[in-house]
Image (cartoon, rainbow, N blue to C red; front, side, top):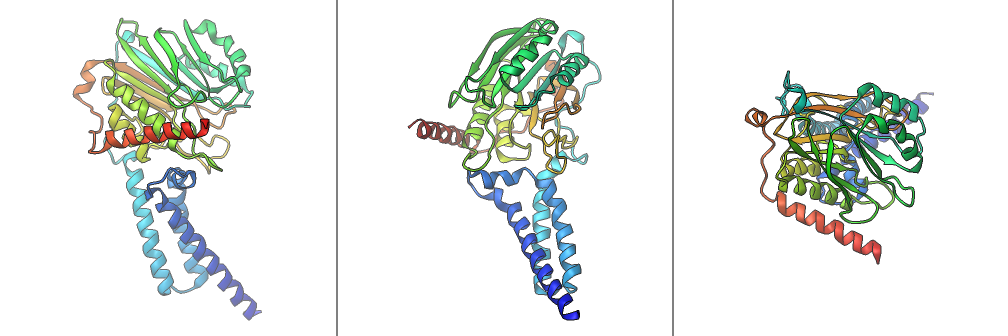
Length: 369
């Protein structure tokens, strides 16, 4: 019996050692300069990996019953990985000052409420979603992953809005997009940066006071197995950031970016586009994983330039999709730029954006041939 127990302990400690090492390796994988989905996907579960590491280490030490050389080495690797995760997640803690400053009051004609929602292809719980839209009553509503069925369901809220544009993929794919607005839409259009599969929405929107801002709706392809790299996604996001940077009008970039806020591409996107993230200093606000809270991270973003002040930012209740909707109330005022500012452009940002866009275009050419 004692011999069997010892054998079990050796097997268990070896398994825990291996598993902990795998989690450590997964933690550092995003440091590799690669577009491979299995490398970049490891950026998503930073919080989950950070929670798993000390638990696995403690279990290993308990089962192994002594520290030893392996224990010390594993401890050092775990501390290093935890430090890395902590440095990436730290900006979204309450220890950091808000990047987007809250404003208590805003003239009603300068205020815009923006709601975004990935409804998930195949989800047919439209009544809950439409009821939520009626209750929230946003000025601007961006709906993603729509198809012909959702197009029909969304017609029920047409009377709630004065403007509507949509793109429905011919192949009924995952990248349909609808925009509804109570405010005047100015020259709305869908552009296709690299393919005919993933649209990007561009529209001017005129506030009630007559001022106009630009709105960019994004939903790039995610990095998923077996072969979808991040080339399209990164190129898509950085192209949108360059468009925001070159706009003469204050700009909002919103949508399911299929990227987490601490990813290099998201941060570069914000620096290039001169965008503020309301999550900085407030929390993670996870939006993906509505059906599985263990796999949960923030993929849906409402980012805006410094001429917008933040009145509120919140994640809304689940309605059947694997994403939670997001709502932000923003105030367009030149005075906000005096108390908040986006992160400064870093050396190499624009060059790396050009490289990412070139990689996406090259991938599109390869797929066509």
